[in-house]
Image 1 (cartoon, rainbow, N blue to C red):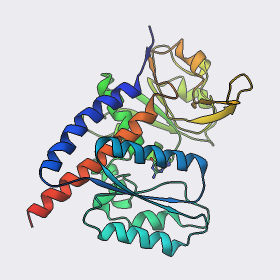
Image 2: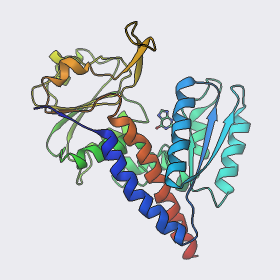
Image 3: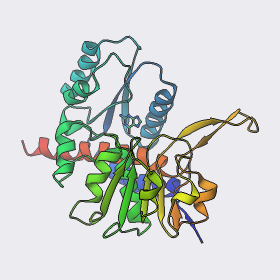
Length: 297
Ligand code: GUN
């Protein structure tokens, strides 16, 4: 029987534990706060930011969302980051990606105080992950590690094939899975859009992580019997049979892959809910560490 991994349930369990931590912090006069910067009108980004805001409120985390217009300058974005950096009450900072093309993403991410970088995208936090001593872990890779722990999937000695080389998922996840530590010790292959004969690699995988942004790109004949498949994709495809005229699919062709594998994450309801839960977890962690360091001053 294939295990369909219930990401919503895992995320709910994590949020119950987080709520207790937040209540304890509140007893000490600390209310975790997340500062969010959204630039422009990307429809998916708007939905993600609204979801993040809603989840913060549900758990008792304050959020300060700056919605800047599409034409905002680099200086304007930087000023907002600076305000969050200097505000002791803001514990975590997130700049929703992608940014409009005229903005310099790396320069903007570099301005975030690494102690408040709950997305784990500042070069210092990126470097710490490569060094095997992560501080903040980007939310999607962190969510995938939570899934493995919850489902007793130990990557040690397994061949993990990651499809996608983004800074947000593929690169940090590769470093985490090859880490000489519990939850790591995998043999890692990274494939991407220029990989020739993708199936050659995916067929060898004990664990596949599909994060390449190609709707249903991984088909049943590309995976090994008994493997574990994690689908990071979230794509809208036309579907005249559905009421909305579209449906959401991942980067994995669920119907054909599900039949062959030991475990698989569905879309929606797989990795997505974990990504938000990890953002909340990182924000609570930031609030805690900042509170502790302020007490030691
Ligand atoms: N856009 C899509 N996913 C993410 C994420 O995890 N963090 C940020 N900042 N932007 C995103």
